[in-house]
Length: 193
Image (tube, rainbow, N blue to C red):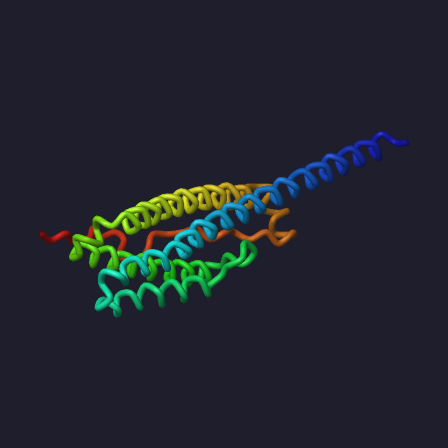
């Protein structure tokens, strides 16, 4: 064999080896993003599962607050109907998902504010436990969203770097959408006494 043929074969082998390694790395990072997204959905589902118990507990004490209770139930229902798969994390779908989850948070905030008017409810062990579990769920959601954003950042950085960007473009790897703060989150809530 000629020396030039051997050099060309070695170069092709190195390029092939790089391509296989880079592709496998991209697949692993994409799967990590999908796993982190599943973790986010799991935490939102945990919160959604707690809501009927919380509503039932409050209903016994504040049955005439039915409008607020109904709002919580409707927001939960709408939020659980919106699903976004890991392979379909478009900015539009993420915005729709975040809007629905924001509505649940808002409705829960109103429900918990109503509880302040009912001393017996505030002292009820079931209510206190459910409230603590909801707070725990919100913390878990926050951590899951941070982990998802970190995985998305790692993936997005990898597919944008040269020469991975060439392979990512050829193989159809697209940027992941980040979770962003809800609209109006930059304004601190007003507390009145």
